[in-house]
Length: 184
Image (cartoon, rainbow, N blue to C red):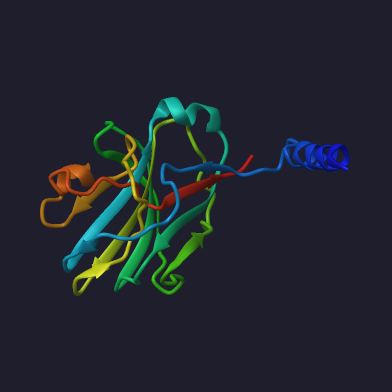
């Protein structure tokens, strides 16, 4: 009986690991949703950056979805995609879309771009812009520790891109719940 059970489990694992050419590639640094840092009223950009060395394999493919976790809903929300950059700030804004009417709290939100976003092989920044009228815990994050490029942040008070670790004087060490889905 144990041998039969062993071969049954082995067969299930073998078939579930079969390669599927239609799988979507995911670009992300987070390790699942956990919480969201409280931010004062203002405008913020939370972003993840994928350097050119990671994007070469995706050249010529399209970014077909942007997924982000919201703990609470902000007053305004939009997704942004930048291509190129200096390594410490994004390059050209190639896509932006207000998603305020689409968002749900305590949930992963998926936005499907209404135009093709072809990946050039340059670095890619995927950002979520939020506007808060009061203190709020909106854009989701994991428990950390932060990975390189998983916690980029821009606050309207200083208009400078920095890691969220730097913004909080290393008090908060997380990765944003922002993901990109790439098609073939």
